[in-house]
Image (cartoon, rainbow, N blue to C red):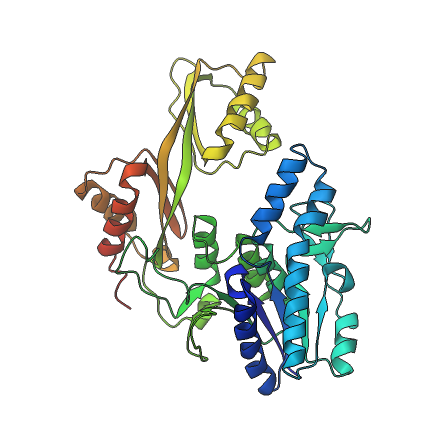
Length: 411
């Protein structure tokens, strides 16, 4: 039997009625002749509730026990989905991560998948099971402890199963009907894309688009898993949703595929740093050790042996960054006059594989922002993206201006 992987997010299984609706979709695929592996998230809101209980019980919690608690939400959904399918006379059973077993590293709360053996589940398919309902987000460490893959980890679980079982496709059911050129809540001209390249989706996911977890897109690109993003609340057929696929599967694409934004960004500047060999390592090494997720980096021209170093990071990591820099200054590893943090900025990015072969994209982007009177604070570029930091109050205006400038409402 060909294998199909179907993943249902928290909103798609947020109630018993929604679980029944999802089960009917699964039944349709079983009727087509597929053996189906269903990956489920916890019911919407449940993981946040469990995390809240952990924090209330033990602010400095043991990460192993954190995983034991927060992974339980997926177990409930998996069991309810299996029971629902059984009531529909579809042979199904639930699987927890350790039963597969989905083998991970020991990095609790942010484990990485190392191996998914297929023998155990394939044996059950051979015995007549048609649907394996797997609790997403969770696995088992080499020490035999339950692990979790980080928030949004069920997407990664789904893609990993699709790769391990060489599935025909991996369908991600969520509360949106595909990938859009930008957030429809900001621009009413946002257009759903029929197809998007892995690289474009990876950039959009890492730059703020919430449709897919970044690690899941990385896995899909590495193993060539065809991903389809579609709504669990609408009737879908083979032509609905957005297909995330290899670049060569897309006949022709726009220069820019989409505009992404990240609201909760901060710009941190170390003023007048001693400019010497190794200063960048002395700054960003401690930041990495402190768990600060640095993104954009700009170093000013050196003058009189001093320079300014600017970087961006999430706003909730600014205090951590300040503490790491102060500690390094006190130990003499780095020397700077002042640290200035601007927590009122947003990151706006344009992404597109067509940018590789088209000149003038950056100039067009900057002109569009200039025409709206929006000042750019920091710029970074790569082969298929350009990102800028602007004042947060201009975020929505910047997204709309760029969407219009590149004509993304047109297919």
